[in-house]
Image (cartoon, rainbow over all chains, first blue to last red; front, side, top):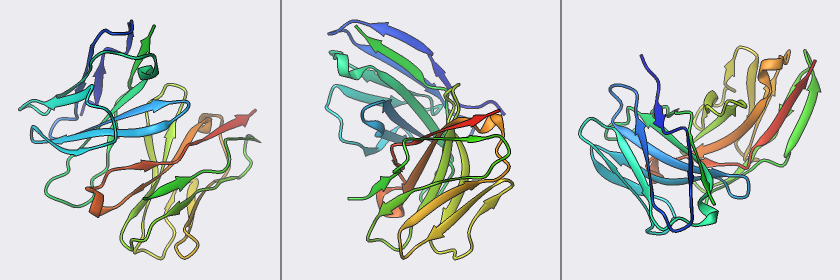
Length: 115
Length: 115
């Protein structure tokens, strides 16, 4: 079974631009979570989507948004990029139905650099 | 708010030695999960071991074992017979049902295994 894939793997943008990152979960997984990883702040939860609905959201400004499609693929968008948005963005998928623990499987991440 | 603390930013040991990584957490809940994740230089986050809070027995996965002290809110990872491939960032993480099973992360410990 293919793992979680994220595209692109690397991205360079300039301040003020917007960016869209993509995540394809493991086949059959319906939950997709996004995390931001930076040297200063560590790993922080952005949001989680389940069955095309945002189910959880972390403490990030509204410039960070996401969506999930009917095939469970997810995208996250960052508008009006700031230098501080430079980070590794990780996506994780899990089976996660109505409740209970399900292991999260991580993708390789997208390295975003904002100049 | 839940917090996860890893007090060792970096550790290094010789190959074949045993190493213990520390983690403490803070929660008022009784039902939760604790994890150790490994992130090698290639960046893919991998689950190393999981512990359910209701289980008194410490989890073990081959060379990896935990020392779970619920009253002390301590969750350390022991790696026996360390191998060069164990070189990675290790993250302790916490999850609880009442937060829809979202992961809260420690800052990480960089582990270097020396030949």
